[in-house]
Image 1 (cartoon, helix red, strand yellow):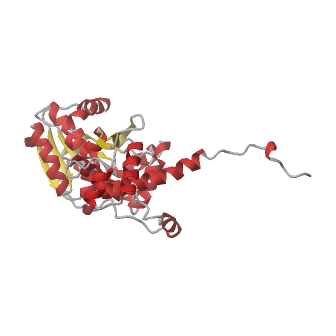
Image 2 (image 1 turned 120 degrees about the horizontal axis):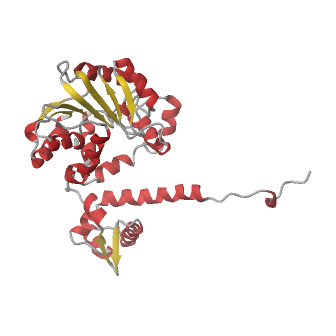
Length: 335
C-alpha cells in the first residue's frame, strides 16, 4: 500500500492555534503598558514616544513599539507622532479614578501563576492563587465592580426588570437581606422604588464603606443596615427577612458549604419568604467553562453548578417551590 499523500486528506489551517499564540503577545504588551502606566503619562502630557522616553529614561524604540501596540489594541489613538487616550482607556486605565482596573487586571494576568496550573491539576492542591473569598481580596473586588459604583444609574432599568421577572415587588415593610452585597445594585433598586423597603447588607467592611457612599448619593442610606463580616460568622434573628439575595457568590463554595449557607438563610427567612440566587457562572452555559477554570484556580472547593444541583442544595436546606428563570436567577420559598 502506498503512503497517503497530502491530496488524500485535508491539511488543517492554524487559525485557532495562531489566535492563541497572538493573544499571548497582546497580553504581554498590555501588561507591560499597565506596569509602565502609559495612559497616566499620556494624560500628564507625555504624548509622544520621544517625550516619554526622554522623561522616563526609557528605550525609544521600545516605547514607540509599545505605544503602537496599544493603538492596535484600540486603547490609544495616534495622529502623527502624538498619542491620545480613547474613552475606554481614560475611564478604566488611569490610576486614581474610581473606575481604575489596572491592579485588578495585573492580578488576573497571574491567574495561573505563570504556568503552574498543570501542577495544580496533577496534585489537586487548591487554590493556586490567593483565595478569592478572603478579606484581603476586597480591593480587587472593589475594582472589579467599579463601573457599578461609579455609575449606578445605568443599571436601574435592568434591575427593575430583574425584580419584576421574579414577581417580587417593593412594598412598605419589605425586609431584604443582600449577602456578599458588593455594590448592591439590585437591592438598591428595591429601596429606590419604595421608601418603606429596608435593606440589610452583609460584606467586608471596606466594601460596605463604598456601598454606603453610593447609597448616600442615591438618598437611600437611611434604609440600609450594614453588617460587616463574612457569610459564615454573621448572625441573624430567625424569621427576619422576606427576601434574601445571593448574587455571584455560590460558585465560590462546594455543595456542602452552599447547603449550610442556604440553611442559615432559611432560618432567617420569614414564612412565605424567598431566597434568590443569581450566579452568572452556570454549568448550563457553554461559555462559562472559562469561569469554571478560573474558579478552580482561585478557590479551594468552588465550581460551576446547574439547576438540578442548586435544586438539591436548596431542598436539603428546607426550601420548596424552586424555580429557574431562564438560566438566570433561581427563586425558592420557605413554606
